[in-house]
Structures are given as structure tokens and as C-alpha cells.
Amino acid sequence: MSTSETTSFVRLRVEMVLEISDADALTGTALESIAADFTAPGSTPADESPEERTHAEEAVREDAAEALASLIDPFDLVGQVPGVALAQASWSSETIDYDPDAEDWAAGEDGDQEYYGIEDNETDDEEGGGHTER
Image 1 (cartoon, helix red, strand yellow):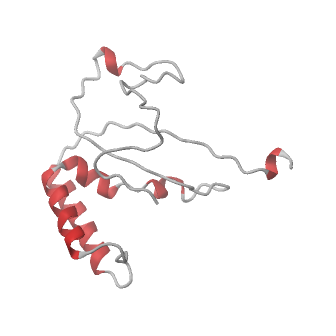
Image 2: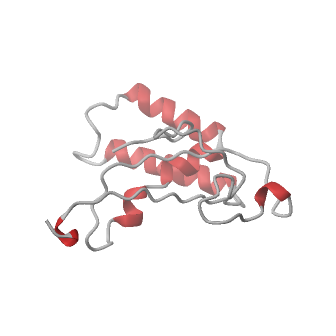
């Protein structure tokens, strides 16, 4: 097979720091999204129960990072990219102390594991709030 005929896999890592300027708006949108997932005909996944909905609602009410993670969908990021099929995705969010002037947040060189003050735990799984694999 030529290079164009072989399947290759690429891990795309994206790290973002977002400022939440209106936690109430974020939480409200996340709650609306959860409600829509459970009320739209045929859209409720078979493995999600009313208890899971309640748990999701409580999580987004208690933590803005959970609300944000519930609204972000990696599939939307690559869905319109030609020649690409998403094989697996996971993501998480957490509230952090952020100081753009701190040394830990200085940009490093490409391939630097501490590029954004993040250490790679050398696993393929991400742990944390909003974790989803599809």
C-alpha cells in the first residue's frame, strides 16, 4: 500500500484555559442541554437513567468546570474536517489557579511535556470531570 492508502492515527492534544465570566449563564446552558438530551424523542441514550440525569444536573450546578465539560464536544471540532474520522476522544475540565505571568505557564518548545505546566502521566486515559469517550 502507498502512504495515501494506509490508515494512520494521529493524537491531537489541545489544551485551553478559559475564563468563565458568567457562571450562571454557563450553568443554565448546561442544564438546558441536559434537559434537551433527555426530552428529545429518541435522543436519550439507552444507558442513561433518570438518576444519571439528576447526577449530571447536580454536577453542573456545583462546578462550572463540569458545566463546561458537559457542553464541549470534541466531535464538533473535527466533524467537518475532510478525510478525518474520529476514532476515540476523551476530555476533562478542572478549575485551576491561573497566572499567565507565572513561570509554569510560559510556552515551552514543541514536544515539551511541560509546555503549559501540565505533566503527562503517560497513560492514554484522561481522568476528571466531564470525561467522555465515544
